[in-house]
Image (cartoon, rainbow, N blue to C red):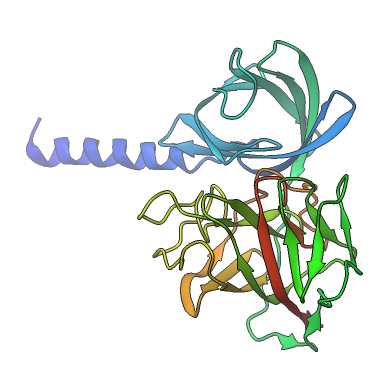
Length: 309
């Protein structure tokens, strides 16, 4: 066989491989999940995509914790399965998922770390429209500096308002706005003590981390990261005991985060819900949720400017 023939066969083989790699499995995509566990509907998220020409891999977000990689999703006779090692779950075995397509949706079971089995369903995550040049409405102060009007605690309330400051003096309940929002600009100021941890959930689904950083390197699970998904390009935290600010723009899935006057995430897409989300209904408007169950935190000057159609 001459060199030209050998080159031709290699070329044909490469084209065939690339062609197979582009054959999209109907399971592929991002899925908004609901796990029915112990009488509760727990919002979760699943991504399935191919790696090379044969292997399916992915990511998974449970009701708490960060996004976790799935090294392989196995498909046999129309059923797929994967395992997730424990993260913050109780000690035990891996979480084992099996599923199948039902029309255009997914359904299946999860074996939890304690060995109990629960059902889950999933719908394909929606495409969220990005508006290039939006019309901005009137800024709205969603914290009046006097009381908790417009907010409600998710459980026994530990939040206080003192001297124009919204305070959670100890770990307790999360705080949620009564109003919901879709696309917006958010300005907020916050202050945390040493070692504390909080966060702001956009639409109640996407957490931007507020932490006293334990590392000098930026991280998607540390200060100003979108939890488990997006890493800031630099760490610009001032440190505990100092007032700091977020200016966040969210349109569709595209988010820009400015911290203390410095843009650390610019026009990045948030793939899906983060752990601790209120629900997985990504196509709907949602409230703001302030995390109060991880440690003391203070907020002030919380202003939202919505996009108007």
